[in-house]
Length: 94
Image (cartoon, rainbow, N blue to C red):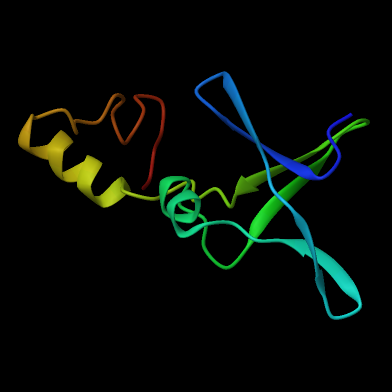
C-alpha cells in the first residue's frame, strides 16, 4: 500500500509524498531534498519505525535540546525555586 514513498508526520497531521527508490551500489535508497532535511531537522541518522504495512522515517530525537535556554528563562522569571526542601524534617545528618 505505501510502497516506494515516505510518510512524513508532524503535529498529528499526516502528509505524504511520493519519491523514487534509487539504486545505491548493491542496495536501494531514497533521496531527501535539502528542504525536507532542514524542515524536519534530519541530520546524519534517522529512526526507522517498521509497522505492518509501512515504514515511518523520523528524525533522531534530542530529548534535552534547548534545556539551557529554558532554564535561563525560568531563572529570569523566578520559576526555578525548589518544590520541596532539600532536607526533610525527619532526616538527621549528624
